[in-house]
Amino acid sequence: MLDTASNRPELPPEIARRRTFAIISHPDAGKTTLTEKFLLYGGAIQMAGQVRAKGEARRTRSDFMKMEQDRGISVSASAMSFDFDKYRFNLVDTPGHSDFSEDTYRTLTAVDAAVMVIDGAKGVESQTQKLFEVCRLRDLPILTFCNKMDRESRDTFEIIDEIQENLAIDVTPASWPIGVGRDFLGCYDLLRDRLELMDRADRNKVAESVAIEGLDDPKLEEHIPADLLEQLREEVEMARELLPPLDPQALLDGTLTPIWFGSAINSFGVKELMDGIANFGPQPQVQAAEPRQIAPEEKKVSGFVFKVQANMDAKHRDRVAFVRMASGHFKRGMKLTHVRSKKPMAISNPVMFLASDRELAEEAWAGDIIGIPNHGQLRIGDTLTEGEALRVTGIPSFAPELLQSCRAGDPMKSKHLEKALMQFAEEGAAKVFKPMIGSGFVVGVVGQLQFEVLASRIELEYGLPVRFESSQFTSARWIKGPKKDVDAFVNKNKGHISYDNDGDLVYMTRLQWDIDRIERDHPELTLSATKEMQV
Ligand SMILES: Nc1nc2c(ncn2[C@@H]2O[C@H](COP(=O)(O)OP(=O)(O)OP(=O)(O)O)[C@@H](O)[C@H]2O)c(=O)[nH]1
Ligand SMILES: [Mg+2]
Image 1 (cartoon, rainbow, N blue to C red):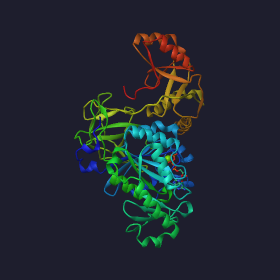
Image 2: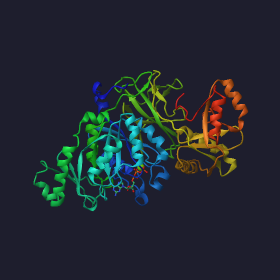
Image 3: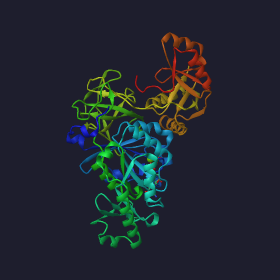
Image 4: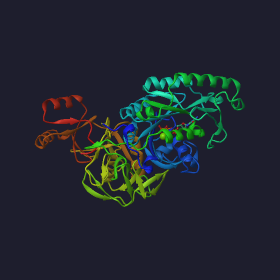
């Protein structure tokens, strides 16, 4: 059992001021736009690049891949650090599309809270529901942002009810919207009794904020038309009667979520949400690991890899492992033990992600996310410590559900293709299988769009046009068992056997019937649909 927040010792101030969280939602709800505005208020960049704006302005800081910029969708999680007030925020923007959910789920193992974004017109959507369930499994505290209030949106009570019912969590309004769509004026800040007024003319401007002494304050009449004011007073009175107040402990336990209303693209409601994360969001938490859990205040440094990204920057051409620091105070140049290989690693060039720029990280504290450039030693799920054999647990690995064969447009470039595919396999972007018999590769992914991302990246990052075609196989199973039995089985079934990128044996077939038959006829073997991240 993990310790609960209530019986934790006080953390050193540098750790206590960290807030590490992921932004999650159904596709298109506005995560990347919100991330941009966070950076704007965090002072990390001058002007937020607008998602899907024309020409140069299009480039957002977290969608750095070409395909992301072309299509305006996120295909990969990206981390960013910045200071806000006296806090250090470490934020991870995640892709909403379910084809990339393996990346998103892994990210959720590396954060202490999630900001769930909901589209005010659409409410709780299918992917919101799934992501939410993953958060609940880990008791992750959730803060909710209801976005796109500048458009026609649903009734406020209806949105709150839908969250309470579909997601089985209590909801407390932190702000209350005034007017909808074209008539949306802004919000009443229920936590601080302020009126926040949206400026439609300047999308990057901080909202005008008016201090109000309760809902009877005549000042309200200067800013809100009579009909909307009457509605606001009625609704807030009802909300205060029917909905629970903000109980910070219930938020930390993951049983209550506060909701803010706003419009990310208009920079509206964003600062209030950030204040909420700072004031009510969790400090770095205890990390589940074997054979013991890791507490952030431990003097010794430890961390784990939750994501690997190759070729992040064409100029660098390297591979970066995203590491969540689980404990201690890391300093650049430290030697850490790579627990899987038991080898020491000098961490001499760790980077911090400041928007799309990287900066050398001279130090990092528990809670931080740093990048460690490496040549393939660091894999997803790896733990780094000051010597103790600890293994962080709970990082998911999905079964490849779609298989396609992959060929280089130019058959002479097969070696190049192998190199590119292996790189992506190590990144966790795909499973790559090399059949024992015949040429070419079979690539396994969770969702169709991943094939498109791979084809685009192989062409851009390796200069290789490739084709994905339907494969003669539809399922892949890792074979385990006593060596002599495995060898005998492999010898008899060569046409179905492949090696994965670690050289492990995989059985491939079109027929579930084959798998059932082998399980029946070969009780000494086990066939599994996923492979543990760390062996
Ligand atoms: N009207 C309106 N549009 C918004 C608002 N916030 C974001 N958008 C638009 O919604 C679209 C999707 O925004 P993104 O920020 O890319 O959404 P996302 O959640 O990151 O999408 P994925 O990463 O692909 O899941 C873009 O066209 C944005 O300009 C808002 O407050 N109001
Ligand atoms: Mg996005």
